[in-house]
Length: 223
Image 1 (cartoon, rainbow, N blue to C red):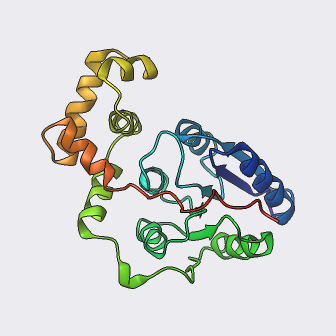
Image 2 (spheres, rainbow, N blue to C red; image 1 turned 120 degrees about the vertical axis):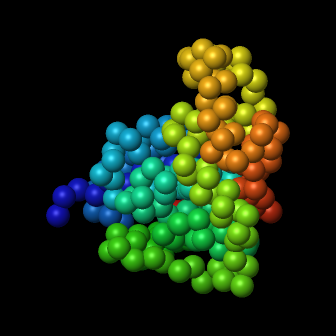
């Protein structure tokens, strides 16, 4: 069997390193690619397009809630995404599954449980979290928003996330090393694809994907 490749996307370096070490042992020397923000995750998913799966934290810089999960499912549909989060809200868990997650793992889960989940996902199956609540199905409006955002190109996605963070065209142009005219062209395409008429409406759509932070802490280290 070839060496497994797993992308770990989490903005907390200590947790990310601990999880990476635990996964290397649990998966028999798997290659672990780390990403601390959306830009690094996007690059990792492009450069390692044959990776076996992604472990994704919901609270990362450069994204709105479930937008990173939606991006990965739209642009890398063959790549299973396991959400790993300190949030144990059944509604959040169900939303993650409805948006295409292959599993939902709590950050306090022991390595033995994480290994069981990953074995299930690597076998091509979905791990149904026991805390999910199918009765709390994600709204049709949110699912339609996710579908529209999934139609954005990678660059349009970046621009939308920056707009949602409150950046102006000039700032976006500087961050992406493109002209303001190009930013405006992207915005025109974004508004058309999202079916809205202005930036404010686009931001409100993106915010539908928001996730409330967990009530206490960011979770424990894998043990």
